[in-house]
Length: 361
Image 1 (cartoon, rainbow, N blue to C red):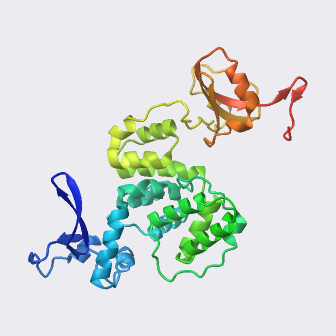
Image 2: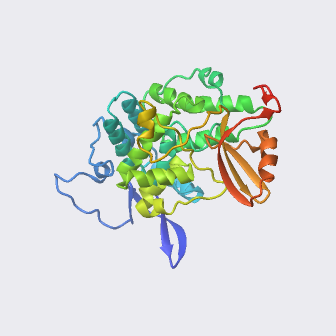
Image 3: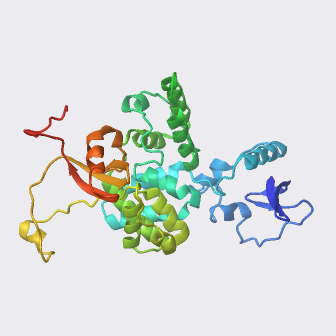
């Protein structure tokens, strides 16, 4: 198997024999082990032996191919890029998602998600977090309900898709634009779905169409991230509020802990999550927690967040999408304000002299 060696500061690719995730040079004797000690192969699978139902990950990545062909393929892959040491199957993410959906207790839901996060490789954490919250890191990729559900692909008999492979497939679909892109996107989706089991295909379809996206899922993920990383939940929420990026927050928490989360601060033109109203049993209950309060008429428009520095103005929705191009009148109004730098948050309505404009306007 190909191996990277440090030779006086220069990294070179050498050849070594492969022993299920470990390397040793030819001629070096294999260490003896006791009869009760699990083999390297079993250890690499967390002590799970072949034939155990939990052996799904190990079976999916082992290949029965001639040694020289395997070595050449590994060497080529190492030259192209580095991949996580243990690739997590998409089936594990789907199983966790299904278990969360079937569980009513919030604490149990959080425990399921936290357990999955701990098993992931660092590079997989932001990807899987996006999947589980229904918001892949690529955002919406322009694949409609009819497109993804029109593909009739025979389900795979056993899991083989990894988290990383689904992420790369979404990126490929997103990057496919221009003439003939509709057909090419269908082809890419077909190639993806034909490798998926029935459960995985259902998950992938819902992910592409936005059916998995729910605010409650994001809230669960914040608490699960805190539990998995062993950091305070409030610190995780603060980092998420200031970054507006749940996958990145998960990655920071799992790899750098409290120090990484504390490093997140406010930045102009990086929208923060909006503060939303909380429910109360009545007016008295709502006011009980405040020393003083003011009441105003509710103006029902669109929730926007505006960032300005000098003449540069950007407008974001409550979902943190940039809609500056659609609101030139508001851009002009903000530029007319006697400030150099500001952030504004609130409802926006388009008004005529005699009242609000219509939706069509």
